[in-house]
Image 1: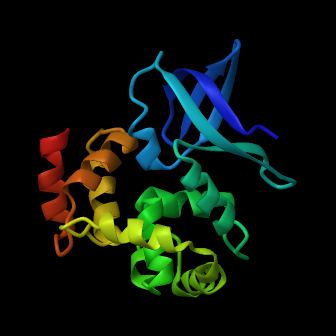
Image 2: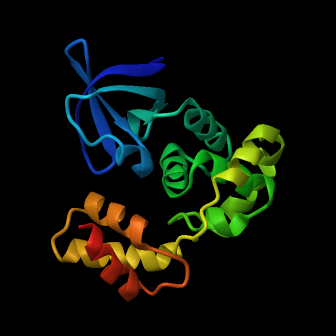
Length: 198
């Protein structure tokens, strides 16, 4: 079991970070929100990890900058139908605090904004994890709410696709759209606003 990686950031890909530890490069799949914070190759990083072994997908390492994110990731993958990639996708759309609050308050709509996560799966996540959320995590969730809500994922995804078609790297497009998108905006509005961040 690899509990964490502590070493030099070699670089990042669209969905992972490569960290050099004692001359060995380890690649860890990470949430987009964490990858956005790892922008400088050569910096020293600490990534908490989970090693997943699956007969279909092989051996994969998943990483997080915060222990709490790793704890929630482990909780999510205990839910039938939620694999590591789906758990990463959920944690890419919302912070740990926001996810805890959404689960505790039965806010299925917030979790369902994750691409590929349907209502039935969201219901299972809430049902199976609600009793495992700590009271302090609910408070954190309340404090972390943003004054402006993000746009629906379908509109944001359409804007990302538009930027990708124009030649922008998906990682850069996602970062720009995440900063620009707000609830009620059309894909065209998001696209126009995202250009300011590119």
